[in-house]
Length: 229
Length: 385
Image 1 (cartoon, helix red, strand yellow):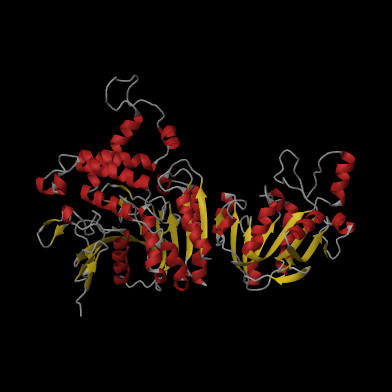
Image 2 (tube, chains in turn orange, green):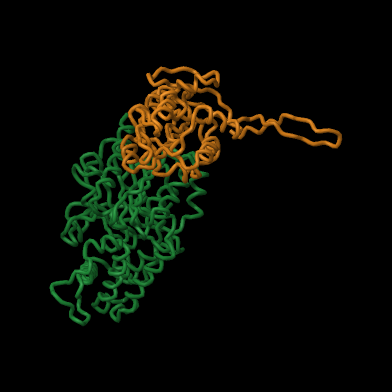
């Protein structure tokens, strides 16, 4: 969907987040290179979904199990909690409804791996600040009128929506524009500035704060949500 | 107990083999019994020592066992000669292909035009109604008779796709891979409607004689031709018809103000109708259309896929649709893929972009051919390991 040259640097990182012998669903899998890599290196049991028929056909030719479908409309095909991991690589920013897609990922998988270009990167900020034009970079090579990327967001924005959707960020990594990798441990301005591409390992928060009202007083309690794996 | 017996010998009528089943006492879905029956089949390529390269190709409504090379009845190429053969997508250098004329058919397998051993006359409409399940049961007898333990793949389009679904639910342990092309879990109301018009055309031909035409030495040719003309329209698409014919006139410069075949499309359909009656039996046509109409696995298929999970888990599925197919449209094919996805089966689904309608599966569609070839070859590698 939004493949470009710099995009596939994140595969190695994605692989490092996945346990051996797991079931993996790759949304927007293209011709399935990542799936093949995971099958080979981690003995993963993979499935994919791809919107482009030519790429689906290539994936089939590579012996992979891929569904010709649209991630925004067709994730309903998959059963709840039917995969260990669901991967959405470099696609969230091209979605009409990223919030729903994000929720769907964690309905289908017990964990989700999401990667996206960080619009808060310093170079993008500078371009917008000094040029006064929508930024065009190596990682985001499209002009505004032809870009498939319709929802730009930053590292911080993503952290915010995870909080809002009660999604737990288990791990997060940044890649700089030089391809240097680092773990995002703080949510400081620095991380947001130097991360060109971010990769998140997500899970659903199983502990939710709820309010219980009694006659005497109002108190807070922690409710353990059933783990429906 | 029973003295079931199978003999396989070359057919006397066609350049293919024939399996003669005796004392099989096979109960049809309708409740009728077939004790003795014969099955005509044709093979292509060589079977390997492990018998692990066998592909069963199930034919559609008016297809037959002559999948590729010369068809002896029409003297033209077999119906899937673009797909099957040496160095073709389904490569007979690698695979051993079996084509079986379905039960109730008219090219050698027991059907209405065959002689009823009890009366020494053709069965005609005394032949019991057959279903897709009956066809597949008989195919299974043949596969067993050939001592083939496991089919590398079962492949079919249209009515053939229905047979593939039946194979999947009835004999999952017998198949490694399944390719379902342009089919559905059930025959839709619109499709039944078209079939009914076709049948009415046959039955209103004065030469039909309630199916007893062979005893009158005639054929309900006009009725059957009309049935074929109607059906043929449903196999194409508006775009394909327009591209091929537009409003072009046939062998004339001006319209005739009459009912001759002024338009090329009329002439084309008349030709389709005429050539069909030379190769197909009218009673068999009635029977085949009925078998498709009765097909409905909407309840059974999802249940069996779910509950037989341990014995169908190994199967690799490929589901293919054509975006201009309005007889078996994409969403009907997708229903099947969705059930398989829900049950975590190993399934791929692809919609092929073409304007040629349902008939695309017979035509030169490179993306379609690529998918079939790639799918089969990728599984061959796994099996060889």
